[in-house]
Length: 267
Ligand SMILES: [Zn+2]
Image (cartoon, rainbow, N blue to C red; front, side, top):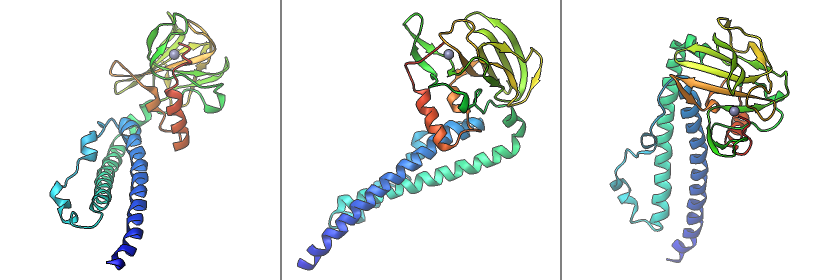
């Protein structure tokens, strides 16, 4: 009996360490899944994978019955369950990437048109931008849905077309000031507002990365910035999910933080 006792403690500890490492790995995988649903699958026009599908266990509970007689059964069962969950999620994620690779092969034209870069370079950003969602209106001090993303930058900073397309409108719009709208096809449209100068005229074909205008402070605006919108099939989308071509993982994390910034909407 004493022999078992002396062994039991290190094994217990070992399981504890294993369990913590599994938690960490599951967290990393969760981040990969977020990217998959919000970046890669959005980019390829594929539906996000349901949470239940990603997590659902293929295994019935009886599976763990054989472990229940063990000493420290709860710890062993818990670690085994985590391991099963990890295996399940990795399997689903791997299938998702296979699907995306197939989609990429058949959708080159669509890919060149989807808005997929930031409209203003990171190096030109003055301070935090403001994200999409419910925000305080800077002028009326009431809650209002911010339908785009604000990039604070100096007047004259170049503004880029974020995907190939045709300029739909180029002119003054109420509230938006000097504004350019690009039709990208496949249901996508982007809007660039408060410009100081419009370069692209209506009807012009543009490519991703072409300079279409300059950052300004025209229309209803509290300071020099670009207000940028992404529309899909007539509905506003969170632009944050459309910067996949020029962000590395660290920049993506920064962008998520920027995008959740509530205080600095410039309209
Ligand atoms: Zn705005």
